[in-house]
Image 1 (cartoon, rainbow, N blue to C red):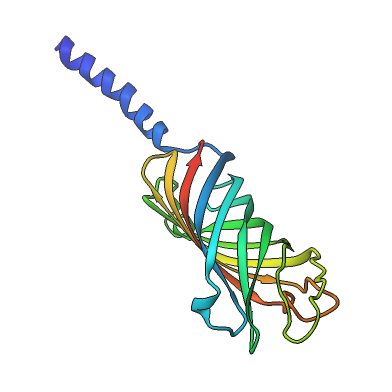
Image 2 (cartoon, helix red, strand yellow):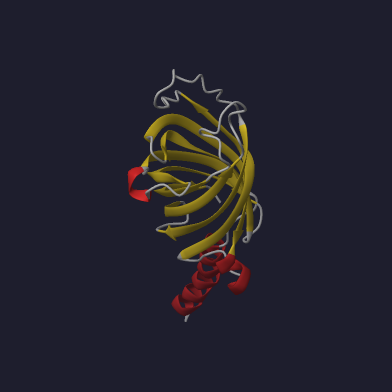
Length: 203
């Protein structure tokens, strides 16, 4: 009888502890590292302008549904000009993003195996090292200004543990005009970015 009572008391102590272990605290921070590719969607042959891209972000989840982050991605991009071919330039895009977890919005849980986010953000894009050279003319000094950026994206987290997730992200970034002199690396193009990475959370 005493053993039975001790077992029941142990269960009463352990079960709430297990339930508490599954409940995340808010707000809690997270960060992630990513790698993948990107392409500028300006009507040029998509396969000719795909280049590598790396990304990193840091942020916080404020509720099971909503979070914010500061996201950077960049490396090298390529754009094409009809009858001239392609040219390369380096770039860095930084945005402040709002994240909405569509899974938790419907099931009202925060211990999902899969989390699917809708992302919207605003920020800026910087380009430099532009090697564009028009035919039959002298090289042009392209003014690589900062340009405003808006982002719309989707992100999938595959949660291995409460702290570690595999992260897959696809973004469409719309950049403003970089150059005030000629229509090169400028054209208010859409840029598609696909990234795979790992996310660390600390609930």
